[in-house]
Image 1 (cartoon, rainbow, N blue to C red):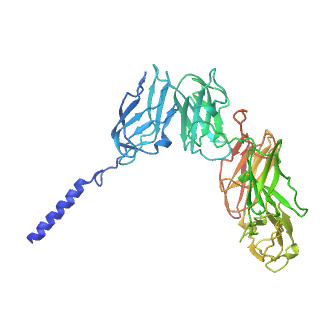
Image 2: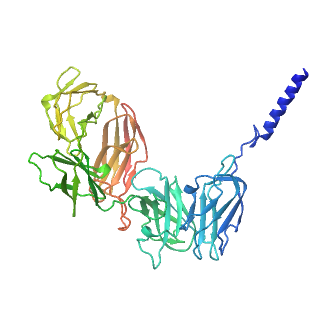
Length: 535
């Protein structure tokens, strides 16, 4: 019994010791939900006549830094980044070392965003800033506004806003070469706010900055700009929505490269207009070629029948540009013919049945195509060979709740390389009309704009496109159950595409308006009375 008592006493002591050694709040106690507090700094916050190289910031508890590189904004920007310690460990203070020579008579803002949080519960000290001036006063003017994507209906992830002082040395090209006078940022929000600004005239731009250097690179960055001159203190609130867009770059031919035997890719960048490839080399009379654009990859694909040659010479023309190129032929293997159907089960009434190919289709032998319904009755159809893509379509009158069988016998399809298909079988069916819904939309276009109206599903997939020039009622039939919305593009030049903007030309992108609702279409569901006003 005495031994048992000693053992119990020893075990209890160990448990008490472990519990006493635990850090953090006791079990059952209230959770710490208070953000850390900034206590004092050396030099003091909002110091004037600042001339130091080192700053210390003190807090009321242990803090840590999170996503500092993403959160920290220094305005005006510095050539060399600040050295901030400690990072990766908790501390009650931060030390900031300044490498650059600071500008005279300038208010500086070190905006930590939401990078400072307490060590235990990660409570964030939101929007923490350290401000000082190398002059005799702190600038105090502000300016706020709204940003959005010019084409997409999505909230920007991170956008940098920049102000450039307009004086005797200012030119529009400054955004390509020099850092701005003031910067701020908007993270996961459409609103932005500049603080501690000086009276004057400024250029305001917004950049989706791929390199985070505050220098506009039109090849990779999106840009938006305030069309007027920003004048402070007048423009403390900017009424104009700053719209972000990607500029189309000037045309530039990149290179020609053989991908597989009989296939060459001609790469380019920028805007194209009637891009053509012209073969200069002497070839046999039996030589055949097909050229098709791949706009998603900025590529002109060129297929040709194989020949016994080391290289081929071409000119690539685009409007007034002509480039000469020699492509060396070293590949030994032709792409085998690969065919796939656009659907493997249900063919919806709005869709066309396509057979897609990796190589250009030259010939379709309809005598080797057997197309029947569930009663094995032949289906009347019309074949269509696409000029833009490597595919063929079968156009026929679809019946409700029908099953179809399509068989392609060997040799029904022949590609450019004289390769033929093996036997292929496709089975698909249709649904009933009651399985689909309908939307009626009145587009109010009192100013008679040229308008492109897109029906969208799955965020930005175009289901149907209409072109109108006045107020019209549009009916969208046989819609699959899904969520839909609409997009209207005010097509100023009536070229039936959305045109982006250009900073140097002070050209704004064409206006895009999104319908305010998401319409949930169900089977046998007719959504009437929807109005879309274009202003």
